[in-house]
Amino acid sequence: MQTYMVGGAVRDRLLGLPVQDRDWVVVGATPQDMAARGFMPVGRDFPVFLHPQTHEEYALARTERKQGRGYRGFMVYASAEVTLEQDLARRDLTINAIAANGDCDNANDPRSLHEWRAGLIDPFGGLRDLQARVLRHVSDAFREDPVRILRLARFAARFHDFSVAPQTQALMRVMVRSGEADHLVPERVWQELSRGLMEAHPARMFAVLRDCGALAVILPEVDHLWDVPERLEYHPEGNTGAHLMLVLQTAARLDAPLPVRYACLTHDLGKAATPVEVLPRHIGHEKRSVDLLKLLSQRLRVPNDCHELAELVAREHGNIHRSGDLNAAAVTRLLERCDALRKPARFADALLACECDARGRAGRQDESYPQRPRLLAALAAARSVATAPIAQAAQARGARGQAVGHAIAQARMQAIAARLAAHDKMTALEQRMI
Image 1 (spheres, helix red, strand yellow):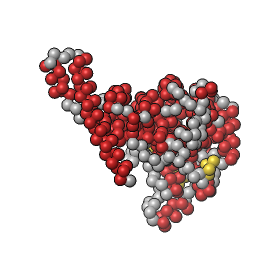
Image 2 (image 1 turned 90 degrees about the vertical axis):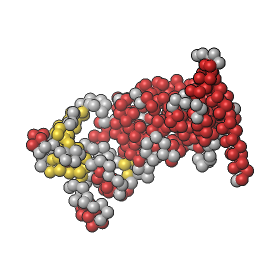
Image 3 (image 1 turned 180 degrees about the vertical axis):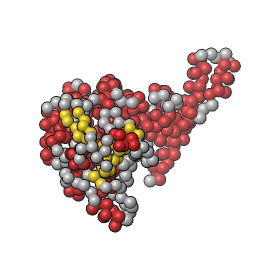
């Protein structure tokens, strides 16, 4: 029975990155052997066990054989006879198919790290590809699992300075043309998409998916946007797809959470449905975006927090962009439509998504977005209104029901008006001093 550290832990150690989770493969053992040593079985589809002390995952060495379409169409074979090289051969990329005899005792000690590297098992050239910064498939078995297309695209977003091997690019195109990508299940698409969105260079994921044709299969609503022209005075980048990638990169630069990044991805979907005769103008694209977004979120089974924020941003981003010209009454109505008083954190995320949209344009990435602090100031003013005394005073005057609500709304609008007046005065003063 031999144990090896494998996969991302080895890769990240070699790249000098923090190792988050360590995965292990066990060669020459049976499930009974693992149980006798106190390991707890947790794998449903193949033998995986938790270490009795560290609770890290230990999987028995296994092989996989394709027997149907999609990522579930595999027959798994795990036994004490499966070798380490056979287990590594089933992995997706060469940089993930390196094994080590345990972890490095001290990664900060050059001697310890050198000794650890000397004991690596690398039958498929993963070290070479790490040094050359190349994402390359291990074998032709890559084509048997369409999820690997998504995984490679996600790795491209994480390791943005890695190129995709030409042979791997060609293989992914073959997989898409043969219909393998048509069998991706929604849960796996969202799992990889959400993880890729959270990488430092999410735009790279979409570039890789477009290059092999997979984006048109899994996200046709997004893929269409590269064919949509924009007005150059507002979008010097020229088309909606290019704009979308700049927006996502801005979201990454601002360290936006996942719901914001999903909202950035989907806020302009309706532009693909703009009537040809009115292009490059996109009047009413907000409603079309909401309609397409609902279908997309349902298809991918997107979590509610991501969908709800994305719908809010798709519907209101134009109004938020123009909010600098809105008076207190109009700002109050905007806050009401956004349910900002009940959900202030979501509204703050919506403003962040809108800032990403505004700054995600060629040559404008470093511009300020004054709408965000102005609306946050307005929301703070509205929330500062003590509603109980106002309601009591209104009721004392004989007001009931909607009349009480109207009195509270008026008080909030007055507070917003005062705060906006002070905010706008201070902003004007600061601009004169620049």
